Image 1: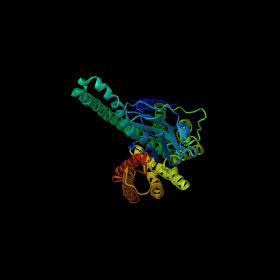
Image 2: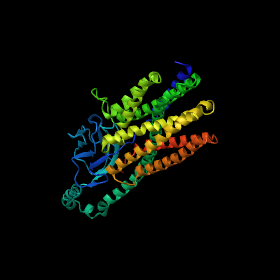
Image 3: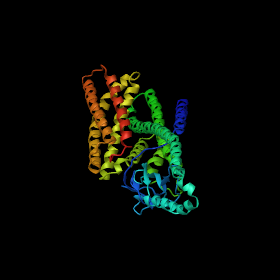
Image 4: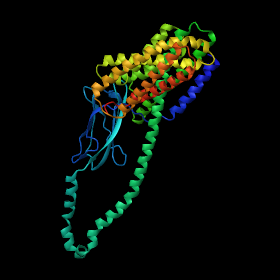
Length: 459
């Protein structure tokens, strides 16, 4: 292995450990269709169990429900039950006292490996119990008052409850302020963790798209000089490491969540499940690719197909009907995006020092890019229609980011038209700048997609 490759490996290992120390919390699809008790509900009778239903199957070994009281203490240690159709989890409860309770749950979707995590509050206000206790306490007072008339006439006896309540209410004020401070701190920490998660997910998506396209374009460079191909392989190693760091970071986030919830993967855990196939299968192929990519075209094509299949079987493409159409459209969408993105990166990377060869490559790329944009538009439209037909048109964060993506795609179409026009006219004026601008839009689209695939289209 060359010194250059060793330097790249050790650099990305360092980045990997930096990411490892900052994995906290993960946000994913939240396809919950029913929660009982309902969020923010006030119950006069304590619930017998907590039930959460989903629109698809969840992993039975990766499900957790925690019930916490106002002191953030877990009030029940009962095991989580799962329904026969694997779409509902529940936990039996003891008799809960009056107060506010927090429900925390975490599951992993069986069909796509996505985490589903959320929390909410409900309140128990058993007024029957609270009204009966004062009556029982006041009944024994008459005999006591006859034996001690001084105390009976003393107004301080009746005022004691009020006096006691005032100091206690004053004492709770600092507690309330402290809790609000803790809440603000928790919100800030969660916001930072969420930002970090989206950054890691963007790195993963960028690496995923670029490495697939980089492997695809390798076959087009066989007639190019050895120095260019050597540099191409050098950049291929960098892109592989970007993808690997992003992939491992996403897996570590999942495992960190498992550890926080006390989940351990069972010995009979199937790697063919959505979670196993998506993450561990992709990790295995990525590690193999470090040593075998760019050596045999049939292995390269197989490697590409495996990664695309693993990615297509995760996310919205397996959440909505018709699933087959959605998966095929998503696979084609990913491949077209990879060809376009990696071609742009190749042109930008070698534009200055290998301009003669890049100029011969640009017309070839222009044809591929033209068809890729058309395919991306068609498959993107199909996927959007499928989600719309299943989820309905609801304005939320998902639709907002979808609109932003559509605007970015419109910019790509306009920019692509300008680039193709300059190529046909053999005009090199500002061509490099337009290609760089096109690449910048591509990065923005990939980041938007990484967010879109995390948000819930259902609202």
